[in-house]
Image (cartoon, rainbow, N blue to C red; front, side, top):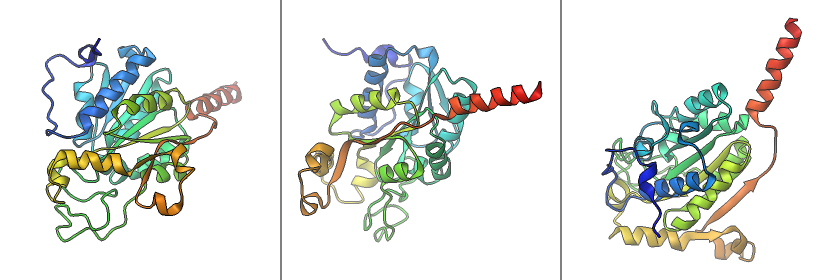
Length: 273
């Protein structure tokens, strides 16, 4: 029996705005399956985003949603979680929104280890806002602001998250669609700041400029570069050249921020007596 996605879609919001071949719809379906598997109540689940193609996702979801300013998703989500620690808070957005204009908020959310899951859809470009290069655009790739090739080295978003203090970091791809919900479920179940990077494709602003013949070619590239972490353990550095690891890349248990903040409040109450 097919999965019933309709019960999680806000009435009257479809069809979506994403281009044919965009990977964001695949990620949204994975998120819906994850929320369903966890049995979350819609009224106790908040999905927060900033600006961009990926950040349009909450507009389609029938739960508590917050579409905020460019790059500010992690800051708004932090406010929601601090006000209502019992809520399930999930951030979604793109590589530009999350790690460029929103980079400062992102690294400090990682550092605090607040119990939020951040899903970053990495399509290597600013899709909606003009096709500019992003911190994840590969060196040499073309964008509207780098028509002769990007001179910058890209971020490894997963390594950035680990270095900033996130206690759960995973990576998947839009090609490996059935893995997405499993990674999101594990990320949400982890008590702390969790980052799930999903490599997906932008056939319009990235694919056309970089001479991909079709969406199929872009998806096949995602398939070819992805190596599960377990398989990578048996591979040589030469075999791993040009590949990206997928699966759970990092996990550790550390004190969670809202719980630690609650202790501060209790100490303050005691000192005031």
